[in-house]
Image 1 (cartoon, rainbow, N blue to C red):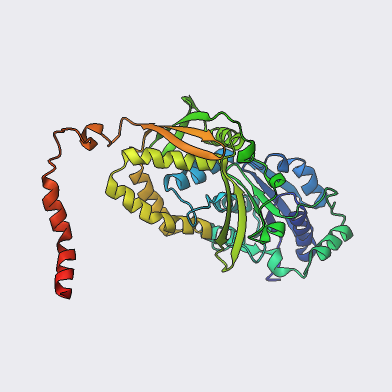
Image 2: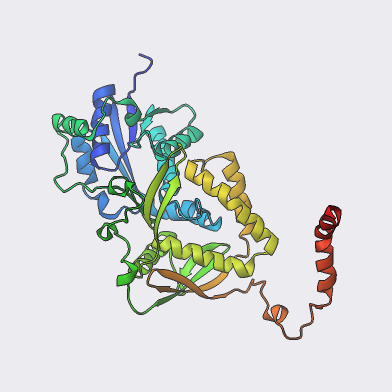
Length: 400
């Protein structure tokens, strides 16, 4: 039978939805299901995953620690590009999906599987991010998207299916919103947050205290960068994942990194999202500060012009695209010499730059001073201004 699936690798979180999907795949296709979970910083969400997966019908489960790869090869390249979607969102979910999908395709190859599956719904961005990566890395892979294929129309029908098939239904009270967590952020969407006028409940936040409850004394930190990459915190070398985790702690306790926005999804609708990104917020502010004294003006302005495009590519799911490869190489070239130290003050929700220094600095006080200097003749400015004003003068002359 042409459409027969023998073995499928499922991106598995252990929650109710992917547990139902696991059983549905077995029932619908009569195939072997291998579960795959990427540890990218979900913390306690990874507890008892192996027992859950096997009990629900998986033949085996891969649980892989990808935290270092996630931060080193995905978070930091986005940081070097100053990638921020629609000027606000640091894209914690967007950046994680290509890594999960890449490893899923690799496991499918390793296991001789003929299909991959995910639990993303048919209304969101994640389905696009997963599937663009699948096809970019294996153009022949079969993709199964249960939310676009199955007959279930409501949460009640899903719960009934779970009960019929012996899938444990969580006894804890269901959250009135959906979440996605990794080392870069935690996101909150849907449910009670769908009214963009209604403020998020304070007890929802997990990574940060409210600025009002943050300490009355500021926390001062220093971050060292080498070629645009953060490598030390307060003089101590840390691996990418450990550095981000530590900044999450420091930022979180000072109420840094909360975002509440309405964003434009790739599939066409607007969506309200609330995010906690304490460490990422600190890194973006610090990175811009070290760029400010080490990057040539025209190079910086050209790079800034690329931010919307790079951010869009990441958000839409085109991490493994030819245009993204070109842009990443360009950013790497522009980040050479973005090296030095930034000092920041964390205080009641704010992250403020209070110092920056670099051996590669292009800033020299002697050139910018109002006192006498040797490189700038103020009289030269007259010709500079008149030449730049020429087209403006001609335009006004022609209008009479």
